[in-house]
Image 1 (cartoon, rainbow, N blue to C red):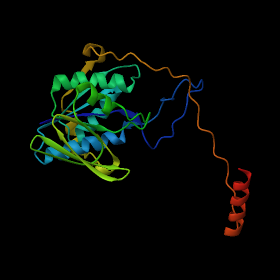
Image 2: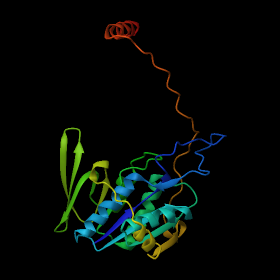
Image 3: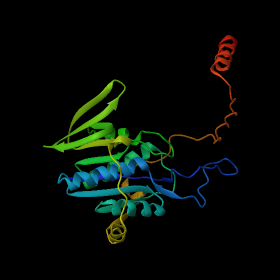
Image 4: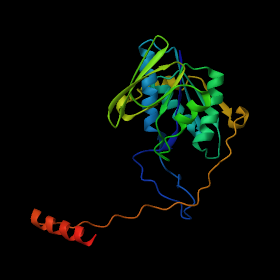
Length: 249
């Protein structure tokens, strides 16, 4: 079985995002970029399935500028077999990304697509669901455990009422949650090997996918700064403050 793992290049989670001076968008100048953390979990899960003998090939794919090749090399160093970079200089909405991934899925014919439940830059949590809809494949979101056997994948996921287990016929789409696994660090030998693994580059325009934006961003604003708190000396003083607050409201 072949597993397709889409990964996204985002601002590193340790970096504090800042806006451009004209507030037209996020300032990416001299900012460290890395693989979306949820996508790292997806790559790790694909590698574990291959180590179990479930998968024969792992293909990582990224959609974005040519700099995203570095992100793909990281996925190759983690254990993926080859990579595909779909070059697109313009920012794409989740639906546009899902349409491109559908074209790649039709070309690659994977048995399973695993991707992060959301990206930490926009937090949309839409691409996986849209992709499953476009492909008309079964889907399981927020996966906390994945088991593949006999042409079926069982996915355990956390819901408000407890745990839910879904049984999906392959091919299927799965999105990963934080509790699924702990991604491995790429070792230096594997980083060196990744440089020799195949990385194919495709122009987004060649895939015949409508990626025209459907939304218009009106502007960006930084969150309001939190006001300083007040230190209280006792629980009695806290109770009095709360009483006054309730009375005022």
